[in-house]
Image (cartoon, rainbow, N blue to C red; front, side, top):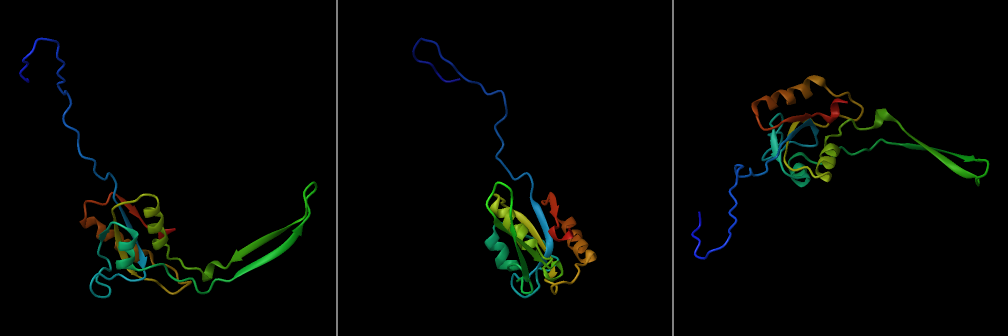
Length: 163
């Protein structure tokens, strides 16, 4: 209690609650998938080793960029459509051959994570990109998940390529 030197009414607040706790991250995701590279010092030294990252720039430094889409062809069929009460227009339909498309979407998942305000995350690379059109290996992705057991911090496991 502070000393009061003059007469009067004083209000002294006595906190009933404990001091507030500093905010901490409540969920730290771990992303598992194929990457362009997995390199901290030498090639493949980060394969199946969880790495904590803080930004997309850091992700690209260690794991590279997206797999280049080289065999996509877009077919556009244009049809003139007349609608009653509206002027005639052109309807375009585009189709992409799904077999020629990359199945590796971990980089895009990381882009979306950081674009939406993500902070800390773990990344487990299970290897470098497969050839376009090749099927992903379930056992390889599960091996990446198994490596996360050794870490307590990740609270959410994300495997974008499992779809």
